Every structure is written in C-alpha cells, then in structure tokens.
Length: 452
Image (cartoon, rainbow, N blue to C red; front, top):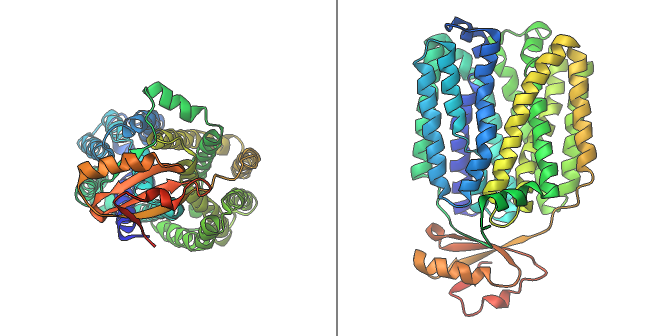
C-alpha cells in the first residue's frame, strides 16, 4: 500500500472501532442493568437493543444514495453527531422509553455504507480486500474490547456512565474524521439522473443481490449465536460473565491470523470465488461443531474459533466483492443496500435465535443456522468469478484541484478506464482499468507519468 492508502485504512478503521466499541459495549450488560430503568420489561429491553440496528437498516440506503452525490466526509461527520446525541439522550434518561429513543437516534447515524464507499475511493483495486479486511479486523477487535470494557465500565459508573462513554467515543470519531481521514477528489464514469434510477441499478444487479443475501445470512447467524453463546460459556463452560471477554479476544485474534493467507490467495492468485465458497463452508462447519459439541469450555472455544475464521474471512471478502461489482458511480448506493441487508440480518437473527432456543433447544438452534449457511452456499456457488480489473498509479505534475478536476475528466475518457480517483494530497491518481482495453500510450500528452 502507498502511504496515502495506509493512512486511509488506519484512520477509517480507527473511526469504525470507536463507533463499534460504543455499540458493542451495550450488548453484554444491557439485558441485566436495563431492568433498573423505569418501565422496563423484557420486550422493551429487547427493543432498546434492536432498535439501533433497525434504524440503521432503514437509513443505510438513503445515506448511500446521498453519498454518491455529496461529500462523504460530511455525511460521516453528521452520522457521528447523531451517534453522540443519541448516546447523550440515553445517558440522561431514567425511563426505558428514553433509552429506546436515544438508541434510535444513534442508529440514525447510519454511516457504515458511506465509510466503506470512502474506503473504496481511497484504495486501489488490488489493495481493496486487504483494506476491507483491516476494517473487519477493527470491528472484530472492537467486539472483543467491548465485551471486556462494557461490564467493567458499567460496574464502575453504571448504565448512565456507559452511555456517556459512547458520547465520548462519538466525539473522538468526529475528530478522526475531520482531521485525519483523507479527502479524495473523485471522478466516476457517470451519475444516474435520479436517485430512483441509481437505486434500481443496484437492486436489479443479480450478483449484488447474491452478496446482499450473503451479508444478511452472515449477520443473522452471528446475532442468533450470541443469544445463546454467553449462557453456554456461563453454564456449560463454567466461566463467570466478567471473564467472557478473555475467551472472545484470543478466539478473534486467532481467527484474524488464520485468514491472512486466504486473503492473499484470493487477491494475488485471483482465486476470490474459491476462497469465498470455502469460507462459507468453514462457517457451516463451525456451526455444526457447536450444534454437536457444546458441553464444555474447550468444545465451545473450538467451535467458536472455526466459526470466527469463516465469519471474519467473509467479513473481508463480501464488501470487497461489492466494491468490485457495483455500477460505476454507485458505490455509495451499493454499500448502503449492503449495510441495510447486514443490519436487517442482525435484527432477524436476534429474534430467530431467541425463538429457536426457547422452543426447540440449543442443538436445533445451531443446526438451523448451519442449514441457513448451506442454503447460502447453494446460492453463492452459481456466482461467476468477479471481473478482473487492475489499478494504474499515476504521478501528477500539479496539485491544483481545478487542473486536476479537468484532468480527471480527460482520464475518464480513455478507452479501458473504468474509474478515476485523484488524491491531491499525494499528487497521485489511480485508474481502475480493464487490462485488455487500456493502452499506456493513451496517456501521452497528459501531465502524468505511470509510477513503476
């Protein structure tokens, strides 16, 4: 990666982590401490947890549409403001309805798709899976840290203090976005005439529909698992709730190390489809292990490790595939639909997990989840290999934005050029090109040189 790409990945991953820690810290404690709120019932406690994801799901697509027409950094900042405001509303409330409203406001800051689209703008095609994997790793790390920090902070400062900590994390995210995240000068092949047309393009795209069904299934399965895994660690594994984070952390770190060779193979060896299908299979194996062997701590840890190897590999591959396949000029919209599918999956998974374990038991819960993943594999196996495009890095002779804007339009008109991203801060431009159509000599006469 170039220095600009590394900066983009590190800052956006940090931004994601700050926000996700604020989200995940609630999960291991709210069902217990939320009972102290006025008017609390099990149903309303569940709604307070789930309304965040539901609000996210409904607003990802509108924000994705806006992201293809507006400054993405400004949209991210607006989302972080809502996240902080919602945290403050929840922190100041003693009633369950106030917390529900606060969580809904936090969810309205639905910036996941916008962040993914900005990351895709700031990285080259062949670096994208690694970049997305870094985001996935930051989410996984946030998950582990949150499950350690959540009980500790709530024990020290109470539920109100926990929500105030989400406000501080939101403010920290704003600072990272405003002063550290790069701003690309972006020029794409076309912008559809209407929001409806752009939305239809993404919704009618058969391969994107497969990927959206995949992320729905992935997060439905993950959320359903966590309706029962904490109880299994407590009752079958003999592990106190305060120590659960020390299981999640090594499992997540182990899975991150395990997926690195697969990511390298997917990108450098151009075996994306094969690695993708294998990852779905690994996920199904992990769920099958948990269905059959969940009576001891080590059995649970083994099943969770296999599960998270598949989960984290898919978390890296899915957004990369979306960015490769989405219509030109529609990255934000495609990522918005993708993120909506993700959050709807989480919402459905929570309901499904609670229903299955109550009505049919633990083994049936994991078996049904494994069957869902196998159905996904059957859908994904029909997916053709993604198109191979490559990136060309150009050195620019000027950093003037008016000049670069005109240059971007000229570059876009060259045969084989599918997308142009100009980064004034690095005085470089990246072309996303079809190697069978693009000829390097077509750049002659322009104030650029191909970087070796």
